[in-house]
Length: 298
Image (cartoon, rainbow, N blue to C red):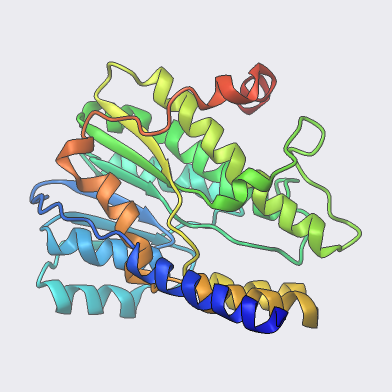
């Protein structure tokens, strides 16, 4: 009886999830505009670049991986040759600084900055910068990149910053003590919480940036794309290495997962819609969760 009830619930939930997935209707042209998309080689990032390129935008694809094939495919599909690839390793703050310095020297404008790159779990406990890899790649590095490129974004206003977070952010245990999480015991729950904390920190920082940028013509928003079938999923499996956990993730994957194109729609909409040109979607988020987090995140 329980099995039948669960199966019925799962089918209804699956149908609801499929029918409720939004698609951006914005037809905004971005000829003459420049966008940066991190994590651009695959998944949501790749689909976002594809969409922006089809609008005539000059897109700077940023990733730690070789993007040669991805770039060629995007140019072939869109007939937009104005696609540039740049290497950056978010696990290295120096790499982020070098990338930002290069952009400031070579680009005369930046209309959209999309911080999409991220990781779910990490087998390592520290980067060379002494930070937890998940927290650094998902929060510290994007925060630093925004800070370093603010001058160019303000110069190009109206411009937008869009950050990719996650619904798991609301399962966080973020505090001053675990900002740089230590999962030295290798427990899956600790690794998961480091991810949730990093995405929550990004939301709070985005809200604070939004407050500080009011009146400058630069907006800063964070989006949750849903549970998307991207390369991050197999990596979670490999790190979890637990049959029960992987089975739960697999079932969740079947019911909830969006295709990367579907997952990119929220990201693209916030980046291009004229209706959101002056909107800060997440407002007063910090006030809701107290001043302490605001102090240690900024």
